[in-house]
Image (cartoon, rainbow, N blue to C red; front, side, top):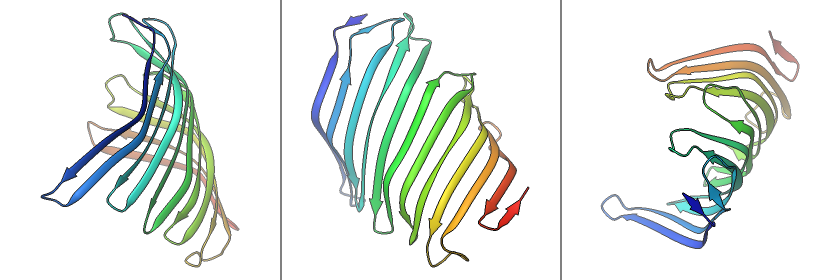
Length: 193
C-alpha cells in the first residue's frame, strides 16, 4: 500500500447521550499524514479540542510511524504530545510528553512536564523515565523514574514545597498487580531513602 498522504482539517464529532444527559464533542480535529509506504518512516501531525460536559481539553502533537508490509509490526519515534485540560476544580495548562522511540519489549526514553492547578494547589512538575511494554501489553514497566515538582497551596504543610522522587513501577495486567519501588523521596526538608 502506498499513499500520497492524508489531510483532515477542522473535523467535528459530537456524541450525545440523551438518556444519560451527557455530551462529548471533538472539534478543530486536524490530521496530516505524509506520504505512506510500508517499512518507511511516515510523519503524522495531529490536533484536537474537545469537551465532555464541564470538562474542556485539547491535544496536539506529532510522531513518526513505520508499519511492516503485513501490518503485524510497527514502531514509533519522535513522539511529541502537548495537552491541556480544565474542569471546575482543575486547570492543567500544559501536559507535555516526549518519547524518543516506542517499540514493544524495548526500553523507551520518556520525558514529561505538567503545569497547572489541581485541588487549589499550583503544580509545576517535570521528569524522565524509561518505559517498557511487552508485545502482549500485559507487562508495563517504568524504570529510572526521576520526578521534580514545585507545589504551592494552603493545604500543604509548607508552601511552596519542592518534591523530588526517584522510583520504578511495574504493572502486571494479567495479575492486576502493581509494584512500586521508591528509591528516594524528598519534600523540601524531609527526605526518605
